[in-house]
Image 1 (cartoon, helix red, strand yellow):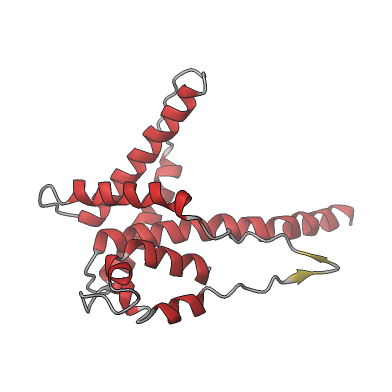
Image 2 (spheres, helix red, strand yellow):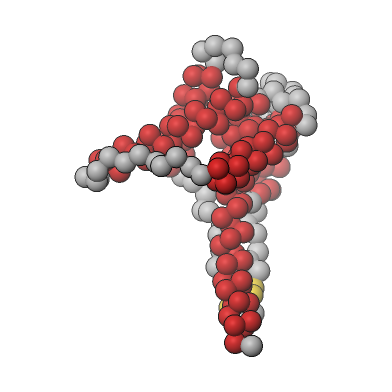
Length: 189
């Protein structure tokens, strides 16, 4: 998790790249305040040990580091959303950025689906229960954003949502087989 977060910080913060690992020119930058040098960032990227569950090692969820070729389109996409954000004054820039990224992801997935020769598709309207869960999740991220003054609130909000989207499936993935085994033993009794 620390490796992914450190890489995301390095990708999102222009100061850490432009100044060759020195502190960002914006001294109060939330991303640069986490790590003042490239050495601190690379130290945070140390691989984690995999916990063993019983006799077999649990399957790992950790993502491999992204190559420059893999991360370049993401950098371009985030830069495009930042440019779109700055075209005019926004009441809630962080929420706008989350919405714009979500719309771009939806349209990109739809285009790839159509390009593969499948029919065009539209999402069904979400249920009230699903909408409430996503609204609570975004409100939680917004609360974390507003807890402290941020230099780049949109980027911070995007990073928070991305981290939550990474951590949630990880928890389900690592705890999934154990929960199934637990339910199976209860069923036998």
